[in-house]
Length: 87
Image 1 (spheres, rainbow, N blue to C red):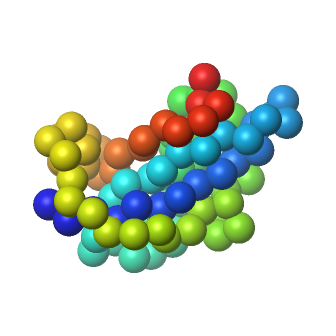
Image 2: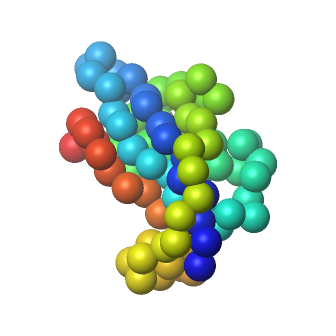
């Protein structure tokens, strides 16, 4: 499965910056849909009040999905790859 990687940086309520990738099927090109995925993730991280727009989240590249990513996409439509300060 080919997926699109959206590079995302969100300033947390404590001022630190979360860095994570939103990974979705390559055919999803609507930024609002991608932002919805990111906002769902932020709710799970108790950061739902933080801003997530085209300033914080941009398309990066396409790649082949791993089995773990593909499973997540089939279950909920996207995958989040946590990079920095996501705790």
